[in-house]
Image 1 (cartoon, rainbow, N blue to C red):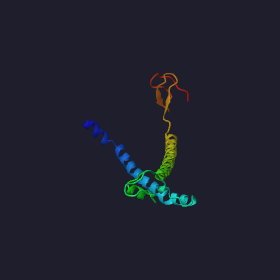
Image 2: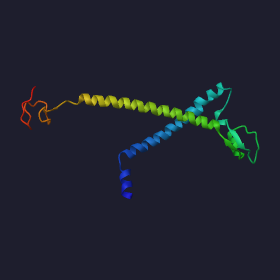
Image 3: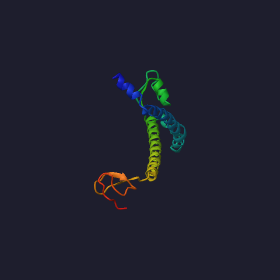
Image 4: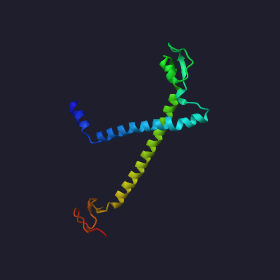
Amino acid sequence: MLKEFKKFIMRGNILDMSVGIIIGASFGKIADSLVNDILMPPIGLLLKGIDFSNIFLVIKKGIENEGPYRSLEAAKSSGAVVISFGVFINTLITFLITAVAVFLVIKAFNKMEKSFVKKEKEEKEVTEKTCPYCFSTINIKASKCPNCTSSLDK
């Protein structure tokens, strides 16, 4: 098992995967900030000052303070059990933004890869042909097949 693990770790793509995970985590923080700091304040303002991060439902009142609670933090700090709908909405929007961004990056990568493969195929020069008699592969400039000695039409 140790040898298999060493073989897995020594693969070249493990480093690529690590870099992808680190960049993905950083991108997640950027998406969080975009949602919480840029998108949600104007949306909340349009909806008469609603702060989505403070939309919650108290299931059980707190021990220290029985409410009403002005914020989610106040409810949690008093020991209340809450369902945080607003935090879920923010997380859902963050996920959607991240998914769209990843989709666009993959779409651009696939488009770039297709054009690269297309250019590579165009650049590949045809140097071989198939003998119509014995179906072996021969040089395109050959006038006789070296395998079956048939004369080839030009």
